[in-house]
Structures are given as structure tokens and as C-alpha cells.
Length: 211
Ligand code: PRP
Ligand code: URA
View 1 (cartoon, rainbow, N blue to C red):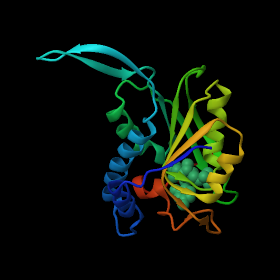
View 2 (view 1 turned 180 degrees about the horizontal axis):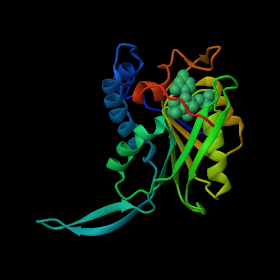
View 3 (view 1 turned 45 degrees about the vertical axis):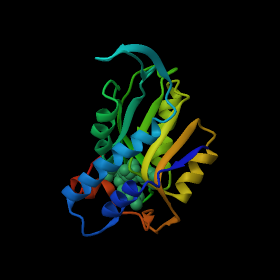
View 4 (view 1 turned 90 degrees about the vertical axis):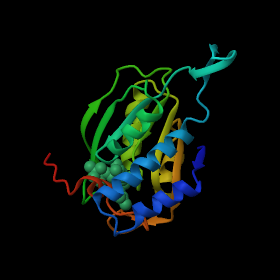
């Protein structure tokens, strides 16, 4: 699996604000928004371009635009924080949604929403979720996307844990990973160590979804 670690100083500084337990909800969201923009910028690095001529006030210049903008797929809730940063960089992107919540006891993802185009054949996909811990949630999302024909899938995560990275790499699924950090492990509750805590709660407050 191809892995890009975004080690830019500004990305690392935003991640540090997110890791800091003293950051309140709005500080955390602001840092996540900035970091989301940087990660999408990096994830877009190899997207193919159409080239065309454009007239400047002085002469003709070679112009470029994305040949096939990716569809952005946030894993709700925490992934929602990366939608506006992604759309600010790729304004003509479509957006699909996958809703998953980890069961606190089994740590398995429990699906509650799927709003995606039926056919993703030939469509680049950026699946965005700040946290890759056990990998269960992202693997579930990537299997859904692959099942609809996607073969060019980029997972964009702020913090990844080594067990989740290994799970993705060993899955055989066509996925690349763009992340700011790979942390060594997980605690007994499958939280990333050192991580940043519960990303969804730190952005939006505690959740209580009844299934
Ligand atoms: C978090 C996170 C990922 C998942 C990662 O979501 O946003 O989706 O956990 O864990 P995993 O790799 O072990 O599956 P959570 O289920 O807590 O839901 P939330 O975003 O609604 O808080
Ligand atoms: N989900 C989170 O939000 N944080 C973790 O550390 C693990 C899963």
C-alpha cells in the first residue's frame, strides 16, 4: 500500500493543537479544518489534468483543470469535519456519505447510513476520516466503495495507528493512505496511543446513537 506521511511543519503544528487535551471544541475544529485542507492538497498530488489554453491580459498561457475530480466520502461523524476543507480545494467534487459508529464493547463498526452513487467505476474516491485506529471502520467503508466499482481509493486520515495501517495494507483492497502521523498502538478501549482522544466527541460533543 502506498503511504504518504504529511510531515510539513504547518501540518504537524495543527496536529499538535488537536492532540493537546486543553484544546476546546472550537480550537480543535479550527485546527482540523486547516489540517484537512493540507491533507486534501497532498492527496490530490497525482490527480490527472486536462490542459487547455487560457488568455491572460497579456498572452496565451497553458491552463489546467482536474480531468476527473474525486468524490469525497466522509465517514460520519468525525469525517464531516473534512468535507468543507475538501470542497474548498476541489469545488466541483461530489460528496457521498457513510455513517458508522464503533460499538464501544466490540470496537466493530455499526453502519447506520449509506448515501453513495450506485456506480463508482472509473471514479477516484477520497474517503475522509480523521482517525484510523483498528481499521474496522475504514475497511468497512472501503469495501462498500469497492463493491460499487471504485478501484482508485485514497484514505485521508489525520492520525493513524500502526494496527489500522497494517489492516488496510493486508486487506488486498485498492487503497492508498495519506496521513499526518502513524502512532504506535491502541489502548484497551481501542483508542489510538498517544492519539488525540475521541475525534467525534472533541469536534461535536458526546454522541449516544441507539440502534
Ligand atoms: C471514530 C473515527 C473512525 C473510527 C476509527 O469514529 O472517526 O470512524 O472511530 O476507529 P476504527 O479504526 O477502530 O474503526 P466513531 O465510531 O467513534 O464515531 P463518531 O465519529 O461518530 O464519534
Ligand atoms: N476513534 C477516535 O475518535 N479516536 C481513537 O483514538 C480511536 C477511534
